Length: 110
Image (cartoon, rainbow, N blue to C red; front, side, top):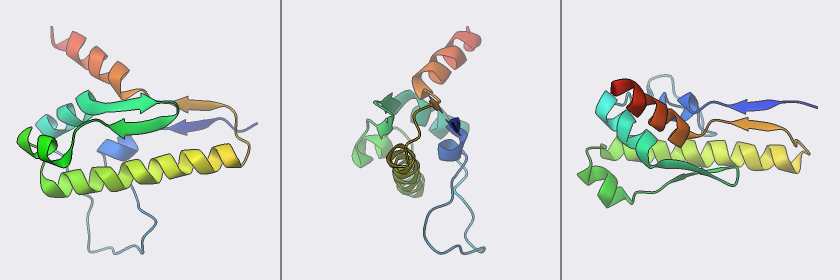
């Protein structure tokens, strides 16, 4: 059976949406501070990625409006892909847990 790997870098580094591709639109480039905040508040819950901050809270923590919008779209697309894989009978998943990444990064700073 296929082993699906969903990399969190698709979310943080930008991901393709299901919309028509427009080569003139480049994915948003998150600053290191924004990426750290994203990892801190992005959780894996029952094979679904969830960002635990509201838009207002994210903006207060330094995430730009465009960055927040792209994050929402990417999370939606990744979660849709996970749901479709499950519906297609895929049973083996290897999903990156953003909290594990955040903990390791935090430990490495010490």
